[in-house]
Image (cartoon, rainbow, N blue to C red; front, side, top):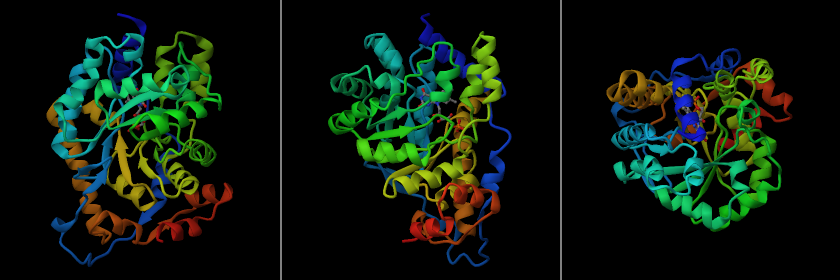
Amino acid sequence: MSDIYWRKIQHLEIVVNRDVDFKDRCEEYFRDIILIHQAIPGFRRDDVDTSTRFLGYELKAPVMITGITGGARETLDVNRRLAQIASQHGIALGLGSQRPILTSNFNREVVETYRVARDTAPNIPLIGNIGFNTLKTLGVQEVKQLVDSVRADALAVHLNPAQEAIQPEGDTDFSLETLSVLREVAREVGVPILVKEVGNGLSYEVVRKITAETGVKIFDVAGACGTSWVKVEMYRTADDVRKHVAQVIGEWGIPTPVSIIETRLASPDSTIIASGGVWDGLRAVKSLALGADMAGFAKPVLTRLLKEGFESASRFVAEYVESMKTVMFLVGAEKLGDLRRIPVVVGPVLRNYVSSRGFSLDKYLEMLRK
Ligand SMILES: Cc1cc2nc3c(=O)[nH]c(=O)nc-3n(C[C@H](O)[C@H](O)[C@H](O)COP(=O)(O)O)c2cc1C
């Protein structure tokens, strides 16, 4: 098995079996988003409506399984099952990096490990995936071919400098020139581009640059609260120096709630997916009330799928959406749009972080409510 396929299998195995979660900092940031209980919500729990539109599809809930896998033969079944789950619950699905398709020169069997998702679920938004640093080596036609090969509705471009810095075979050339490639791709490729991190968060500065230079309008913050890719790569590398660096920066990154605010401030009218430890319906609703449009997750659904099976993974999504609905009921939000009108109290940790970055949280919340 060539290295890139083996790596995909190793990633699944490590994420599911090792301790790769952020520990130290994130809980307090989510705790600091305080939603107010309304003892008379004004409608029935069953009337809560979480439906929304995304990439031209009607979703039952503003939820996405973000990019996980593809490439190795063993991943075909994972993508098939994730697609079944997404289809069952009417949510969006991201594919893992499509680099193996490139390195295999569009080998049919490799393509199939991704395209199985579309074949299984024609009724959901499907998002392709490629790395920012892979993009610089590609022309628009090749990117188009990549998107078409899996019949994706959009293409996610992932930014993962921390992961690449620890990965034994990592490519750390994240030069700004690649933004001009991204601009060209965004203009010419024919599907929307989504820019995502992989678990270290998007900052105001980065989103500003991307918005100004490429016109990209969809962001997945993938903040530092859930899966730490530095920790995942720490288990893979045999190099002691890299292992040490990974221990030093294992908790590196922008907490998801902060990243939501920074991304919204830098690109006020973009579509924002909150992910990175957004692992239950309460965190999802808090993220939406703080300015995100959708919530996403990767590890929890994958772990249930591989450890406990399809039913458990599917139940995770059902429980997630049901929790969202109950929280919306209790804060008096009958529709998703109402989440921008409910009161939100922000505690000192999150507030101080935002103000020390030079932003006013109160002005931000006011902006959201316009
Ligand atoms: C096993 C696994 C593989 C992943 N592979 C990719 C990938 O190929 N491309 C990508 O953009 N993100 C990838 N991710 C990152 C996720 O899309 C997500 O941004 C990150 O895991 C944070 O979400 P979480 O805390 O819910 O896991 C992967 C995540 C997991 C768990």
